[in-house]
Image (cartoon, rainbow, N blue to C red; front, side):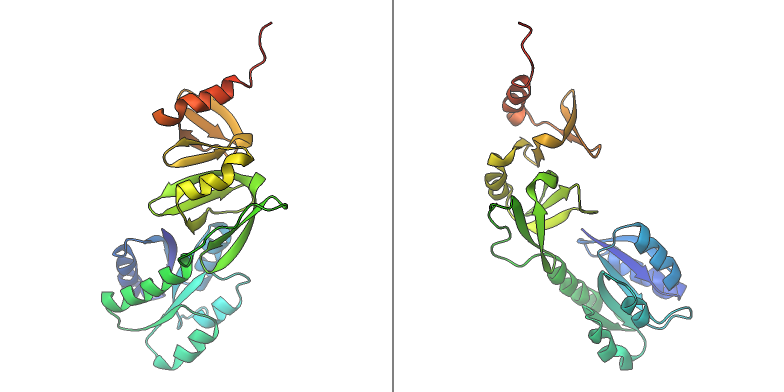
Length: 241
């Protein structure tokens, strides 16, 4: 899911924007803001993948708001004035929606947003080289991850979420579970469920049929994977004699 923030000073326009976002399966509306100050406060305290923002607002121009952000999320501008289109693309906006726009118009912008956010088809992961790191093609960039910082991996349809100790939000990559498992198997990782691969060095507790990771996340142990996992854990115990 692409976490989105809707920003518009007009209540009706904001409500309509929120409705359009909720109608797109791969978008998640995390908050609606009626001014740039509220939006900035939210972004400073929570991870946001994309913003849909009105250019003309009384407290701040949407273009200037984005320009002042050090690492802006993906941006789709909305406005009633066509003159702003060129300026919108100068700040690397994904798209520009001219009010009033329909759900169909919005869906077109959302599709462009998804294309930017999700990695391109083809190879999405590097080999683990001497530096003990992986390079993931994700969103619109390549991210380097030290293998030892990976906590666990979660399968999500045809995508994977890679949770690490050094990234605020999971890295989303277009890749099969099997392919990543092949990369990680010889580096202290084990599959404990059809949807989860864990870093064995980041196990904190094992409670009944769940593994508690260092970050507090509780992950289920699948029946098909339970025996080899428990054999590994048993091998770590010191014999009584």
